[in-house]
Amino acid sequence: DIQMTQSPSTLSASVGDRVTITCRASQSISSWLAWYQQKPGKAPKVLIYKASTLESGVPSRFSGSGSGTEFTLTISSLQPDDFATYYCQQYNSYSTFGQGTKVEI
Amino acid sequence: QVQLVQSGAEVKKPGASVKVSCRASGYTFTNYAIHWVRQAPGQSLEWMGWIDAGNGRTKYSQEFQGRVTITRDTSASTANMELSSLRSGDTAVYYCSRGIWARSGWYHFDSWGQGTQVTVSS
Image 1: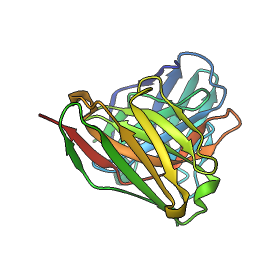
Image 2 (image 1 turned 60 degrees about the horizontal axis):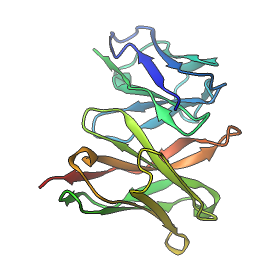
Image 3 (image 1 turned 180 degrees about the horizontal axis):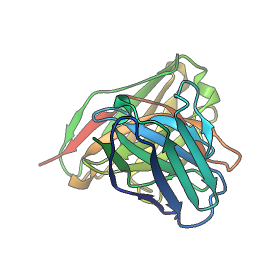
Image 4 (image 1 turned 120 degrees about the vertical axis):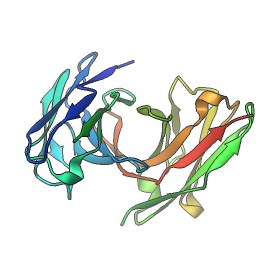
């Protein structure tokens, strides 16, 4: 099984900050990685797929990079609507999610 | 627009089974896979399995093999997930999601149902 490890688990930030979340895979997953945003009581929403492709309708302040085993999600200027929990998902073999990163004020 | 609408909350006793449905609209149901993902309270997301809505082929996580069955009814554009031999650790929100196929042979998920709370308690 491929394990996904996110860091940090919690991130305190302010509106306007540049925020970076890291996701590491236990083995190479090429670029088969997606990022999701989840707010309390709601379903996840895809932001990025294939490591760096922005889902239609997602603001351009979100970006993704990486390949192999190390990936990052960057929010260039944090907005009030961005306070949420973020998950990475590998889909190279089956599907596994990271443990999540909560972005809080 | 793509919509996945799930059935309502369930309360079950240990050892029982639960069946959650997911009705799709806004796209051709048989052209996509439907996946099931669950989330225990305060925990991350856990992939359970998927069904090819076109040919009915299924694949399940080893974690749930033997306990989970995913089916589909193409006439109703609905996918169903049944989980048996329930235990307290199965208490979670269960989501269906539409899979977007990748050349890896696996999927990311572009649309999600609203979630169904399943509570297992004696």
